[in-house]
Image (cartoon, rainbow, N blue to C red; front, side):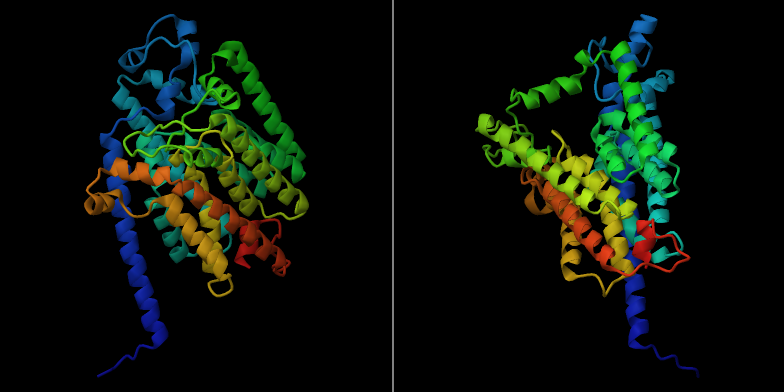
Length: 437
């Protein structure tokens, strides 16, 4: 009788495979429940329907499409960026609000799948790493901000897709396509405007000018047809700048609002408490935003010769959320690339990565991702899941998770800079290849 003796390494590998298998099954089940069943049963408006169909259509047709009559009144103002109105315009073909929501939902799954595939290609360009793909897929499938964006039909998934497409195009030296992608993304909710100075700093001049012309063109058409004086987004921004807003919503995870929430009277049933000292805290909040932007700009200028595109763009995606005037929890879908870059490096160099980076990545994932299901919190606390999430938001866990993600990216940047370059046959302009070593 043949006896097979398993070594310690074999048993360790088997245990690891079993653990990964259990994690994959749980992640798929969790995503199916939260991202499919709940999204199919909860018809929230989200960004797309907040921007749909915009006043432009009514000025052009002077009549109501059947779908518009279902849930909105004649529009005299408009929301977000002009690209979102262009994207939602085809929804006039839908017969009901439910049908439009299903279209958005399916579009989100297509965009999300393509975005994940592009990041896997960026991070593992020359190696087939099925185990790494599965681990990163589990992070994405369990990430609460992503599930929230899917259920709410938010536009951040579209923005993340466009920015990722821009990174892929930059890596392939297709600067015009990259600039176009960043420019279109910037005119959805304006936050990706942070990539324009990055393109200039990194001397991607064609990408910069293409992006700048795209932004100016969309802005000009929007002013002509819609008028920025009717933009709710710019009205709210003006209120922020001039200190007319005194509320500190728990859901807002921007750095400035983290400061404001420190000076509010906590009430889990009041999601929009007032800031106690707005005249003092507002200027201080803006100063924090400017200091973070200045520090990131100085960092990129100092290392402008480094071509770690994926790592630096992942860093900027998190920073743009932290310095925004308003950043809901689902904005942290933009932290997924940073987490993916960090854990990809961890898997490439499990023993070489410093402990501090492992701690930063783990804490960033746990705080920003709400990885423990809300149903568990409900069972332990007896509170509804929405109240539990509100408490976690009140203490700004996603924001602090974003800060740890930024620190992890800065530290990884230092580590990659200090490593010897890869083989001559491998391009050194790709951060993913540099990470692969």
